[in-house]
Length: 136
Image 1 (cartoon, one colour):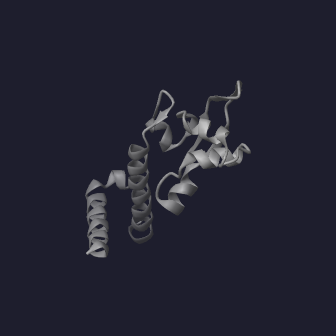
Image 2 (cartoon, helix red, strand yellow):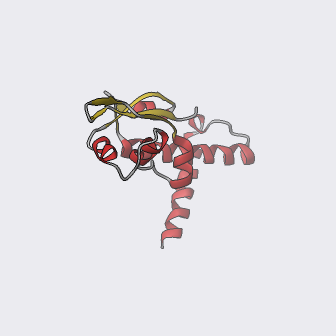
Image 3 (cartoon, helix red, strand yellow):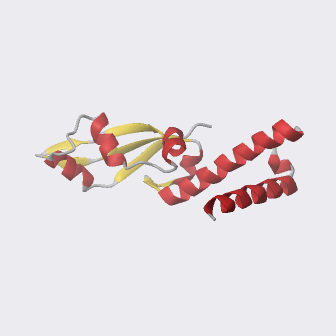
């Protein structure tokens, strides 16, 4: 399932109430940058707020609220707050699992590693060994 979320900020500027928002395709950011981007400039740009304005500074003083989530990210939102590090770790783990399942299906006809936990452990161990070799 695709990961999407609405990020919004509620603030006041010059006596007027604002709630700029953006609907974020989380997967595209995670795939290209391996982490979630700084959302303040994205929200500002989407809502025609100048990044060099006092309005933008006032917006940055408030917390971002997350709603209308779909996919894995929805498990990491509690009372409008997103556990970013928890989500990023889970997303990476799920991404690795998806890749390993593709490999196991292509080479062994295994469609679900959940049904073959020994194979999943072996593939994860091989993946970790490969990653360790890249770091050394």
